[in-house]
Image (cartoon, rainbow, N blue to C red; front, side, top):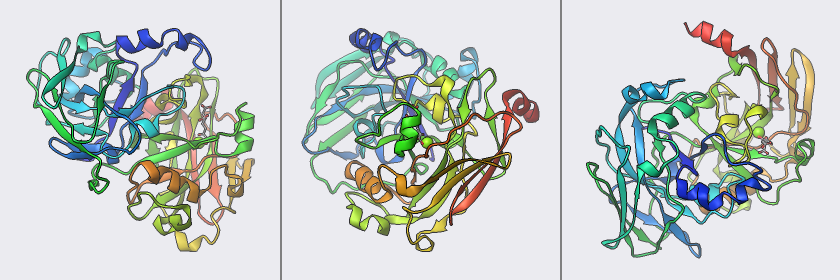
Length: 427
Ligand SMILES: O=C(O)C[C@H](/C=C/C(=O)C(=O)O)C(=O)O
Ligand SMILES: [Mg+2]
């Protein structure tokens, strides 16, 4: 099933109580106003009974939680109507390394291979006060209740479907308490709840545990991977790649429309080179990185700056909105591009050149990014890496024609429409 697995951080009261003081200081400044979304990509997906390989020298923690499974397409629905869109519930283990910060995306902590096993789905009428129990080697280590969550399944479905259309089979993990349970090689961890199939997985320090290509390809994106763009956003260039993930709902095609939400101050374009993975990659060194590249394409990684919050920044509500990632379907084979680090990137708005840069100015190169990501997760054929945008952002308005172009790779055209225009066309 090609599902997307969304998850929400800081949704358990014990978390916001624990972090309350820090969230009133820099870099957060104020507690989160909207759900703090993240994605568990396909390399994390596992089933009941699968053996999960643990990362070396870093402590992994269990995160028993409840997953709500969508039963049909859900777009901009109200919490009061959510029930009719739900197929059922399942137990999941949202495995993670320790999180010292919620400011930037936690890909290295959350998205390692096997870090999201999920049990079988079942129908449940009332999950408002369901006890989620975690046992390690048969001993109960944790029990928490869904009544302790800030937002319930219906509220989360409404919040997410407001900007990201959900498909049948998509999943939302509802959250985990502040206290997490350490998991070590040789352990067997069981997640239980009344009325739901149990989820049990054993853990190994063997590195040869095979991944299963399941779910849709992962679309990674880089924040601030051009120093001049970081400067124009008043940031220093990052010392480690700022990787975030976009869900399939955001992808649209050439000559399609992109929706600018109403009542906005600032929505800008971002011309980006996209790398397409062609071979399963794990622990690949940069010297061999291009052997794992199928080719390249182009995307426009639009951002709605009004919706930026300092939690897993840039948050999904900024970067994973329906229609805001136009992506060229044509892939230019790797062999056709002799030097991917020497390509011009351009954006034209209504025919005027508004952005111009070169991939030679990337902070982290294509080869480095493949080495970096494959060091802690398995990249699979079809996965894509949008490698960031150079300086030259500008606001776009309904009616604008936006063309992004990567030398030798392709040209992508789309038109901006207002939310009102888009909704009228849907009728
Ligand atoms: O200002 C933000 O938080 C958004 C920004 C995103 C940058 C890109 O998408 C890019 O540089 O291409 C960030 O992550 O800082
Ligand atoms: Mg970008």
